[in-house]
Image 1: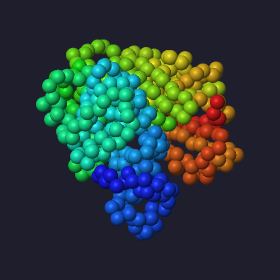
Image 2: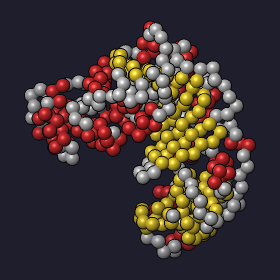
Image 3: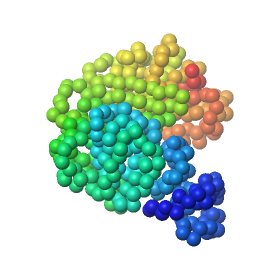
Image 4: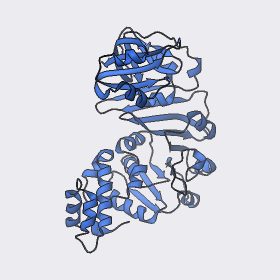
Amino acid sequence: MLNKNLLKREAQDFINSNLKSNLTRLILKGSPFQDISIQELVGQIKSKNKAELKLPIWFKTSNLIFPPEINLSQSSSEITADHKAKLVSGENLLDLTGGMGVDTLAFAEKLKVVNCELNEGLSALTQHNLNQFHPQNPIDFHCGDGLGFLRKREGKFDWIYADPSRRDNSGNRVFRLKECQPNILENLDLIFSKTKNILLKTSPLLDISQGLQELQNCTELHIVAVKGEVKELLWLLKKDFSDDKFPIKTTHYNTYSTDFFEADFFGESQKQIKFSEVQKYLYEPNPAIMKSGLFNSLSQSFGLKKLAQNTHLFTSEKLVEFPGRRFQVKSVENYQKKKFKKSGLTKANISTRNFPMTVQQLRKLSKLKDGGGDYLFFITDASRKRLMLITEKV
């Protein structure tokens, strides 16, 4: 995996000058270098292109050799890595599942880090790459099984971080804790024997209630979304911790702003929520809040009413600040195919909430092009009426 000939200036120039090239044609031409295959060059081009948005600082940094695309797909983004680094403190941290080192690098700006990576080639590659960034604190690289290293290591860490692989032996995606590698559930006692604090990253697909049942000593959960998509669930575990509260802290990183919202997961069911017909303004929670399920807390915090129990949209007569998208309602129509077709619109953004048809079916029926300034919401309200809401962003 680590062909240092890729670091030669002429090879780097070739990679950078072909980032937008047709790769099929490039492969047919073959490699212009005797010591680098065309497959290696194309692999670097693919991975670097993938890093441009996810890892913009890495993309701009010279003398890096990028790992295969699959490692980039499984790695944190720079945004989420920086988020994790804000959650830890102390003198040292063990990154149990180092990977390509995006999280390790972020942690190393705050404390000393030991990076464990089982794959020998990836470990060597990560060590080379991270050294190019000259982090604030030293990083100790260990090639081998992180749990095995932990069993032999004397002393303790202030934090242990784990991001178990979410692929099985056949390469299929998994998300349940017991299916991930390493199996953190089976090794919690071992990990807690070496630290008081665990930071665990899991799939966004993991059910929050299931995670709480399976994990010990959860102090809080961070749900991190970036530009409309939930990326990570971050579980903070503390040795011998117990409490009757479990705060869920949601963060949504938009292009120009960041939304925060938090509430107690155990207190959610005790909060009352009011329902209403559609009023002047409509509110759509951001994806992190949607994942949290903290709708009652959200309604109380912002003084909003909900359209229906399973229609996770909110409404008000007066416009309020809100961690999500806000719309002004232009029209409320009972859903009928004829009215739909006679709306006069030629282009619109379509969403559904608790509605029996998909966006694709509605778009095919309406023949509306995607985009424009109008936003159509197809919903079922509290009285089980099917409605079409024509709105525009505020």
